[in-house]
Amino acid sequence: MTTIAPEAGSPQQGNPELRALLRQVDKKRHRVDRFMKGLVYLAFVLAVVPLVSVAWTVVSKGIERFNAYFLTHSMRGVYGGMDAGGVYHAIVGTIEITLFAALISVPIGLLTAIYLVEYGRGQLARSVTFFVDVMTGIPSIVAGLFAYALFAVFLGPGVRMGVVGSVALSVLMIPVVVRSSEEMLRLVPNELREAALALGVPRWLVVIKVVLRTAVAGLVTGIMISVARVIGETAPLLITVGVIDSINYNLFEGRMMTLPVYVYRQFQQGLVPCAPDQANCIATITYDRAWAGALTLILIVMLLNLVARLVTRFFAPKNFG
Image (tube, rainbow, N blue to C red; front, side):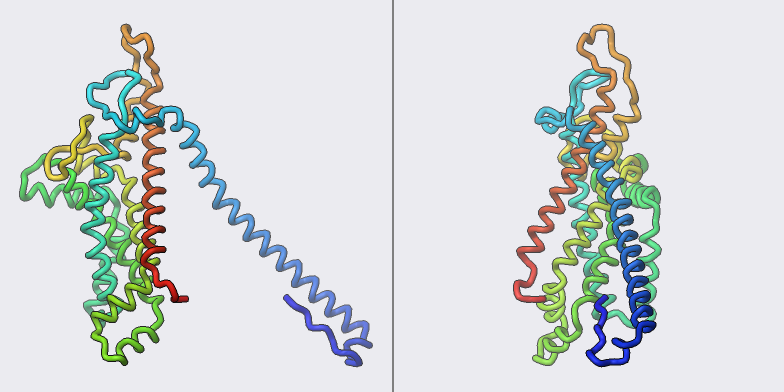
């Protein structure tokens, strides 16, 4: 904080007691400033250490198994402690199920946020806000049970399909998309809306051309947060999608494997005993595959975030802010 020096000839220059008091106050301010700065640095370190620790653990344990063979083969025909098998079928299932869940959630969540910010008034808007808040706290297992029960009504009990998992994930994604999109839309200055409306532009066109265009960076970020929120879910996918060792590209038929479920299954098997005729068997191969699957999942999330950054940079207004 800048200290204003006393002017020449002022009473402060010739008053030693006043000068001593000013120096004491200034030292106290500096001590408080250094203390608060230290707290900020400490909080930063406490936040970064777990992140670096998790990233280092996953990379160090998963990099040994992470190779082209692992990424391009499934677990079909792999049993026991065989040093074989890959994660390709889980990658396919994760990408298809998550993208279809986003296809369901993003339009619903974005339109709901637009209604709450631009049009929502009265009891209906308050009710929508309340239920969105309630959905934010729904446990993931409840979302899985809801999707399973919904499809079981039409297709019978025991249904396991990728689309059921997408519906379960969309239940978890929608409130996150609504909340993040709502906050981004509220950050758009009202002056922009008023200027466009004063020119006679219809309200719906103002929303599309001005509001959404201005908030596109925050909207894409919110969508990516919602994707990251659900891409690692395991419990709802165990209920709705099931487990399979083969490759399945069809969301609307048969079970599918996903990366979180793959990691869970590999750890669940534990140290599988080696068969007597398997000379090159590695007993910890299941753990190695689990860590490599976790590394694959992290890399997919990083890739999706990179794509979101590129989309944001391309579509964001060039001369705003």
